[in-house]
Image (cartoon, rainbow, N blue to C red; front, top):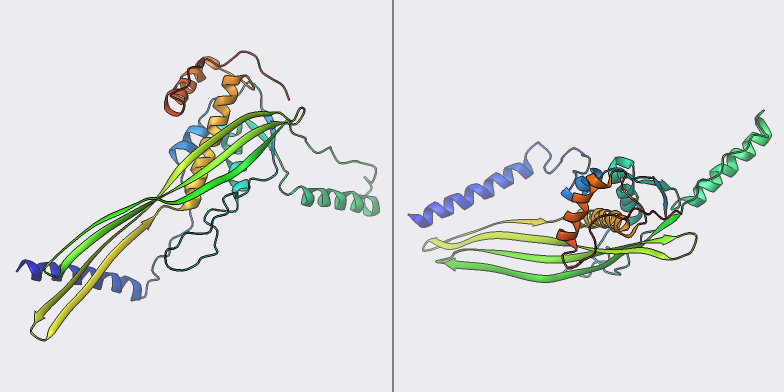
Length: 295
């Protein structure tokens, strides 16, 4: 009786899945949404305002891993991580403190910007009465953000468990990958590396399956399988690692005197929490210095 009950449950699951994929309604179609904020991104956006907004530039933030998407069965030439790191870190810098921390100047598309400005000047000279009116100068930055997605280590931990009894069984498997992001700040005036921060984010994948292989009569066999797999999106893991790197950069900059919070007393608990959570072995002073370096 117990065997028949298990078979009935598995059959119902399989039929339900087939009805969803073969019905008139299109399966797996969801409307686009704005990427939901992670806890790290929320902390980054809620940072207190700085004493002075900083001009900063990002030329590139490349994929330095050299890794292709991992696959145990066939060779895959798709990259393991996103190639749009520049867009992710620019977004994180713009969101820091609700946009109060950094003025990000355009550098990834600098050639397009210069060409458009040249087109404006040429058009004005030929057709506009304001031919002598010059364009305002392009804003320059005091700091350059460099770095990239440093490593992607696949299958750092793998495992699973399974069991079968009288032709009825199931198993579960999991895998853990690790992505590492590095960010450094370089002074335009001196070329000195002012700060360097490295963050790591794990990427989990898990799968569960069940199967039945049983004689229901002397000449009839029932075979059924069902499974479910969930993979954490790699690009979201990279985004979270970049968000944390920008958050840590702001905290380390406040501690080293590169910049200050507009209200150091209100920011002191955040700096203290950052040290205890992410830098537990650091015995440096928690309070942010009063001096600020200019760029």
